[in-house]
Length: 235
Image (cartoon, rainbow, N blue to C red; front, side, top):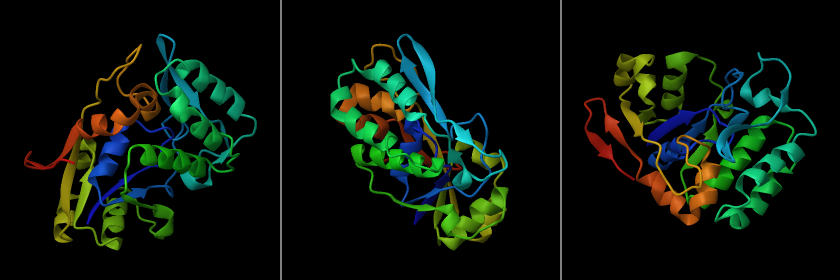
């Protein structure tokens, strides 16, 4: 079984979903400390002729874990107004906006629940069937490289897909000792049709502009390699 692990980001970029497409099991790393000013409560979209951040305000201490982080009230109206103003003229706005709007209006208490509902929205549109699990369900309390390894051992993984920077901090020998092959995710943000194109935006931008083509655009934008550089898996 091929496992990969990532924090449940808000409105994730397309590389998040390409890596998910390549795995048999995707672990949402939700029990680690919340990271301020990252992608856990915000992401980038296009607004007019510029890039804008769309953000979910949160409350509580920065020492809380991701799964503990709560959303402040009265945010959805402003949030949806920005999405509407940014994408109302795109080709596929009418196809997807109402469903997306209903997710935002569900009044989630916890940020992680909102993020996973949005991720599931994208999974449905991109036809991703990869199984998922929250790391908080596994009762693992180690850190850094040991955390990744312990999750993989717990799940009986045969291989783990790391991002390119993961090899800088993972204990490669420990993975080898546990007979877990380390694979590397290589992904190039795709170019696609848009009135104002910017690379590396939320997947929402791709979906509103390309609709059903989004799945194949993501599929064709990356691959998985061994440490040797040999490509071993295309979707």
